[in-house]
Each structure stands twice: as C-alpha cells, then as structure tokens.
Amino acid sequence: MRGPTASANPVERVLNKVGRAGLRARNGVRMATGASRPAVGQTPKDVVWRHGRSELWRYRSAASDPSDTARPPLLIVFSIFSRSYILDLRPGNSFVEQLLAAGFDVYLLDWGVPDERDAANRLEDYVDDYLPVAVERVREVSGADQVHMLGYCFGSVLALLYAAHHQDAPLGSLTVMTTPVDLDHLGPLGNVTGVGGLDVGALLDDDGNVPPQVIYQAFKALKPTTAVTQYVDLWQGLWNDEYVASYQAMIGWATDHVPLPGGVARQLAQMIRDNTIVNDRLVVGGDRVSLADVTVPFLTVLANRDHIVPEAAAAPLLDLIGSTDKHELRLDGGHVGLLVGKTAARTTIPTIIDFLLRRSEESSRSATEADPAPHDTVDER
Image (cartoon, rainbow, N blue to C red; front, side):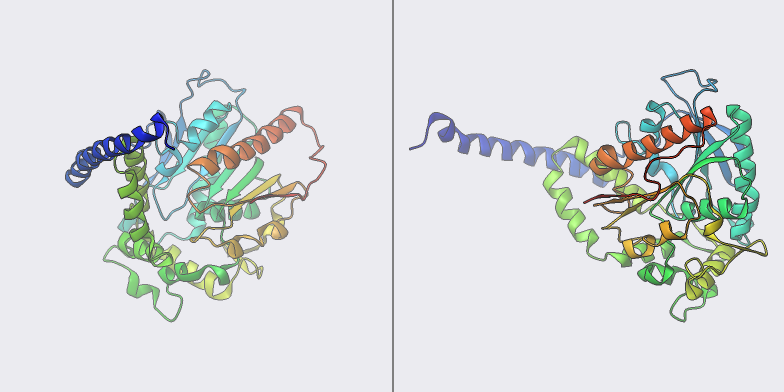
C-alpha cells in the first residue's frame, strides 16, 4: 500500500522534469551563444617579474598582510603544454585559494604563449635561465632564505631538472605531481614529439613551434571516447547552473593549449626515444645530471587513472630521487582530478599542505630531523 508521500511522488517527479527541461533549454541557449562563459583565474595577483613571454605571479592573500615575511614562499612551476589557470579554476574550486588559506606566500611561474621568438627554446632555457632567476626573485620579494617548489605535469620535469642541475639551489622542499619519468610508458602522447618515425619538423608551424591544435589532438587521442561521455554528463547536469559553470571552465581549459617551442619538442623526442630519465642519461646544459642528485625533502603525487601521464610512467620516480626524506602519494583519480574536484579537496591538497608546512617548520627551526618513515608511500585507493 502506498502512503501519501509515495502517491505524491509521481506528480513531483513530473514537475521536476518540467522544471529541469526549462533550465536545460535556458542553459543550452546560453552555452550555444557563448553568453554564459564563467570567469577563471580570479584570485588577485601581481606580476613581480617577467622575462620574454613568461611572468612570475604573486597571489594576494586576504588572510594576512602580503608583506608578511613569516609566510613560507611556495613557487609553482606549471607545464609548458597548457594554461596555468587550472590551478585557480573558479572560486571555491581553486588549488591556489587553498594554499593561500593554509598560510603560504604563493607564486606561480606562468610561461605565457610562445611565439616565433621562443621557437629555439630548449630545456636549458627554462631550467638554467628562467627558474634560477625566478627563485631569486621569490626570495627577494618574500625575504625568505629558502623557497618551496611545486611542479605540475611537465612543470614537474622542469623542477626536477632544476633541482638536479643546481644542487646548491635554496630549496626547502620539492613537490611534484603527475610527473612523466618512464617515457616508455607515456603512450600516444609521445606522438606529439615525433615518436614512431614521424619527423618533429613535420609538426612545426611557420613560427617554428608545435601548434596548439596538434597538442590538443595528441591529448584527445589518449581518450577518444571522452567527448561522447562529456556530452552525456552535460545533458544530465545541464539544468544545474553550478554544474554547467564548472563544466564550461573545465572543458575550456582542456581545449586551451599553447604552442610548444620547437627546440623543446626536438629534445623531448630524443628523451622519449632513449628513455633518458630512467636510464640516467640526462644532459642539461652540456652536463650529465641524475635525479639521484635531488636531495631536498621530496613528495611525488600520482594518480592511478591518469590517462595523460599513466601510473606506470610516474611510478619509478621515488626510487630515482636521492633524498632521504622522500614520500609518495598515490590516489584513485585522473590527471586533472588531483587539482580540482572532490579528490583534490579531500586528499591531494591537504596532504601537500601538511608536507609543506612540516618542512617549513623544520626550515624555520633549522632542524635536521625528518619524519619517522622517510620512504613511506600513502596509497589512497
């Protein structure tokens, strides 16, 4: 026998369906006309240094005086393949926001949009030119002796090469996320740099760079059914304004790539063919470097459902690092899910913040003690 509440459910369901149909129609029109694109990267910031197309941003903290030198400085090194606003996607879903709320003095090195002036750029330009100067600028602005560094995706590779090639760098710690090191397991993404017999030169545009559409297609090939599932998910949530805004922000970023300098593309092709990182054949600025030379407190974060940097490509990293204080965090998530969404808010960001705060406290006390389990692995599956 059905009670009063149960008998009313069919009517409520019809009303809900009608209401949602109207909202879907409204939001669909807004999306089709481009009238409802959400703003991204809204956390206030200042440019404190620039070089070429690159800029060093310092985010403003509402929680404390921006001139407060007691806040530990954290320099984020982003990838050179895409836009950095994924770290500050939307208010309430921002990696940067949470770092600021935890008390960090947050800086981000944004590489800008390369053009013909950057076509000859090589890894050395980023590792031996941009990064050392950016680190010194962070020290100058913050008044701190040491800088904590965090790299994301290919920005992690740049951060690793910097730490390995500059062993006297004033780093308090190094955190890397979704870092490709075993390039034999990189998958179809290697095609963007000419693996499989394709000449890198055939990919370059008139500026001498790999154009954004080539990079986008390479990423798209990693998960060709994504577009279909995204549209299904969008239809189901199209009535929800917040869902639509989040969807647009994420899809907008996922298709918003930048050119890859031709010089870097050629180097990457060689690195992939020889698998130089795990085979310890890295050369930076004419010098042989090894990840065993990275000895600062270290944390690596990887995802077991990452289709861009597969788990197998990132997994060997911990064993390659020379630090005694080193840790690994494995999460059940995807490449971007480590930065935005529930996994990021619940596990990734709190773990990174805890790691950084502990090392900041140790640095300020000039202490030498580390965690009781220096080689631990945290597996959140």
